[in-house]
Length: 159
Length: 159
Image (tube, rainbow over all chains, first blue to last red):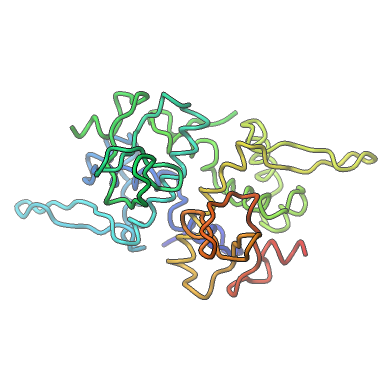
């Protein structure tokens, strides 16, 4: 059951935070966006308690942001994939990343680079390609470790 | 002192969440963006404990996201204003709002409408005006209560 922290707030920012504002939720989603989709892999990457991860995943599935998909029959194994509602959170993650790149990592030290698949240009703060000018969505981009990537970068650990 | 929750994560999303991911922080910032800048007004609007609000504001000031500005001399009174670093969080709030409008409030029931000051067009998910096509920044927009605004909407309470 979801704790309605921001119940008194009639506001779409508060509503969004009710669903994805719990500690770790956005980082769980970041991992799924980067292709880290299985419980043990997410748990290992984030280093969080298994019960916390279980809670967060259950909430994200209940809210229709992630779906549980079977990838193996015997024994049965599931992974987590984004629904359309989940995929539409990409702008939130991209905005947080852009700000963190600017104010914490600093230019030239970005942990992750997001490129337009078609032309290799960088995706700017408005999710447009800085080379060809195209408006891009999540499916049009590829993320790769940047100059500031550390050994725990999800893309390095899955490679 | 800031608790480094996501310390093991070399990632600009995690870095950003270290600074603004605490419960209530983004809603405090939303209020300042909407012009609710004084401690008592923010406290009343959010209905949170005064010590929690004090902690959040202190952290946001320490991190250079808000600044404390004196608006009255006798007795001394201060309000909170956004720094450039704080203003650059607008894309994060706008992305959360856009997603909440779509998936929680629903079209036609948006609590807040964000318009381009120059032409009155709506600001789209890429922060461009849907009428004149201009790329807009926070200073170019005006927020007003939308069809889904409730009585606690910050813009109604300050009006």
